[in-house]
Image (cartoon, rainbow, N blue to C red; front, side, top):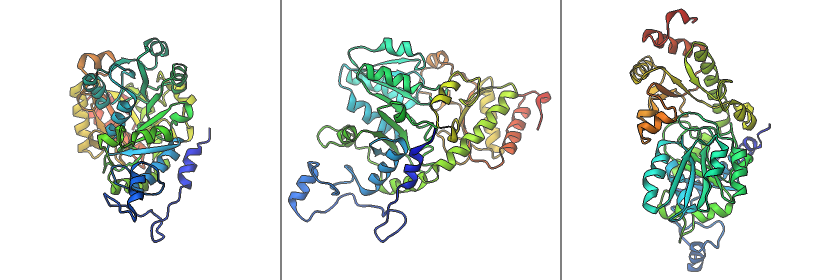
Length: 406
């Protein structure tokens, strides 16, 4: 499968105000007009190329939105000040009091907390389920269901959603399929598979340098404009506006995304295969042992690999904590949440990024105490990385010495 979107992204060219190879950054919060009528028309959304106030739009953020639309193959895209800013705006734009959402049970902890704990204030009901059980999804739909929500590759268990099949269910029931594609930009293109709205935390792989927080909503022009409506747009009225300086910085970092994703995936595949052969329980979509491996193969863009995330179960929280601390001490990466950084990041999701999910529900979905989530970095010598990681496991007796082949 060729990936037209990567070419579309590469073909975008913007010239700065004085002919610079990067577009000029618009760092104004408000914009002037030569006539009062033009200001009125702009406020009503009836002018092209005019800017009113940066909470509504700005040139820098529109450039980034165009690049994200090219990346995901959608008509357009809006940017927000965080991934949660994107998620909450989409949900509140689509749902009213009394409505119902079907959601994957394994999603980012912040999304889970918003759905379970916050939306009840608005009498919006959620059914959390195994998104890989298509019959369960179809059977959960009611007359009040307004969306199906999932992640392409779930956080933190790396379940793979069958986006094409879910899109068929959604379209049959005349509702949107909303997909968070944060874990798999370029590797998966949800819109091409039938998703109606694609969400990103730009904080992660797309920016790639762990120096900002941002989000994106990719979809139709009609939906993205509705989010920016001054009277009832959730994106506008909730105020999650991305700073123009950060928008310009992310746009520049996006230019290397295709190179970075290939290397993240290559390194993760190598380590996953090695540690599975060592007898550890490794979850990675690129392994044939992964339950969603064939679905991933069917819907992925193969030149970008299976992604940079993998999990390993080292038996207990005590083992997990000791291993992460030792790996950080030995400069293998950072004991930190988030993903997509040039160095490997690792955390125990049950006590960090998924801590909002109650313990009994964590256990029910298979999120064990000894689980470590790895965002594999851009290491040049991945064999060396494997050797050093394995040495840590041997020193902590997580692995037996007779498996040593370094």
